[in-house]
Image 1 (tube, rainbow, N blue to C red):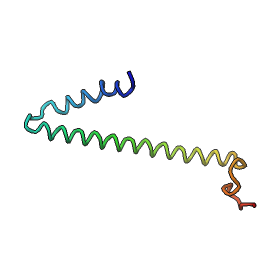
Image 2 (tube, rainbow, N blue to C red; image 1 turned 30 degrees about the vertical axis):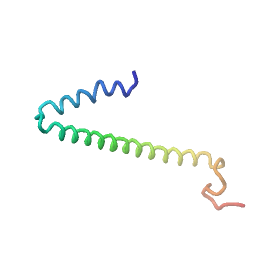
Image 3 (cartoon, rainbow, N blue to C red; image 1 turned 45 degrees about the vertical axis):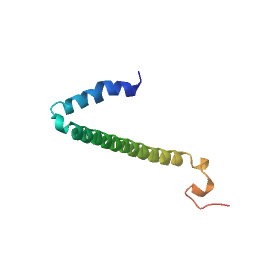
Image 4 (cartoon, helix red, strand yellow; image 1 turned 90 degrees about the vertical axis):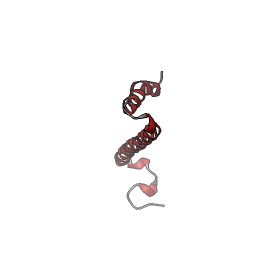
Length: 84
């Protein structure tokens, strides 16, 4: 089983069951639509947060590496005046 399968079995399916348990049948379609929309928004926000953290860490790591090994950088971006 993949991680996605485990997540669906252990989190998503029980979450939907609990969320829809007390919903009246006449509004079940609307409730299902709201639930799926909120779940998708949560996925997007979570993905954006992870992306922002990874981008921040990459920027710091690149700056640290550039300061440790400036001669490995192209002449134009070493921080000093470019020599041609």
